[in-house]
Image (cartoon, rainbow, N blue to C red):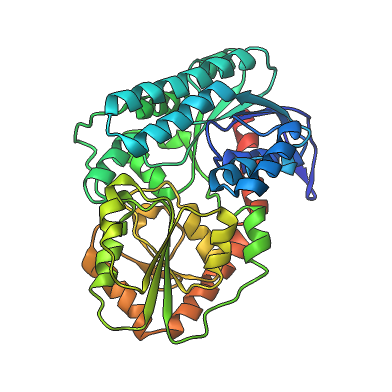
Length: 425
């Protein structure tokens, strides 16, 4: 599809279909980058703001200043302005309903039904459009392919399934076993993960976002030659905000930040206990993210005034907060490759995280790597930066350089293009 001669790309128009699935997934940014080269035939996604609706949405947002509405508006990007966008609006309705139900009642059977409808409706519509396409590559989010994968392959397309989490059987165990898994152990697979498993095994190539994800797949017997690793890094929006503007803390108080869903699966319960037991030292902790049901009682019991809970905030606000904090604490039990770690590194923060976060953090270069679920190691890492504040600047600068040079949007686009080239050979 491409030949790179003296840095120039010879292009054939409209060869790629990218299917994003529900929500603001990273394939939105992938589609933007591929469209810059004139290669995108169509972008499949759930609900996406139209040119007409965006004006009304912006007006409504001025009146109500609603975070959910702002997130919905942010799905629209100028990089896809002239692209054919296939919207799966009905799928989005069931997706949002499933998220709402999970927040208020504990009914696995109802949630499974809503998840099944969310995915199945998306797959059916995607299959219909794939059947009328002459693209060469179908780049689809895991779980959202279904029959459209076989349809694409029958039409001669190569299918890349984009999977951004540990292998499903590993992921389930990682969450339930404090960040550990055993490939010999039998696991009950929820409906959502069954869709993902099927897509992964039907793909011509599986694109994953970290070496950790690749390892989990190989451990469960998935063929290594079908796996390609490309770290996402940061997108152009983050580059604008973070790589050009860094305002760090100049006080004697060490400012720690946790960012992401406030849930036990990301180790936030251990974070709160670790800080609560630190004693009278100069630190603050900010928790930014939506609070899950399993953490609400724990959050309510926080008495220490040094711990601030922001709840869900817009991404652009989080990025600005990172510029004024010192250390990201992210002891997750299971990630594909946590975007928030890359963003914090770009902001010049030192990092405390686990191997299961799927990051590019190197121990004692960018921060400290701890074992998942190990509260004592977490406490030691927190204390390390209180006792050695000069390391924050050292690790933060190392982090910023690493991201700026190796994990930016240009590098990511180049590697995706190389993958497209290789799969067509």
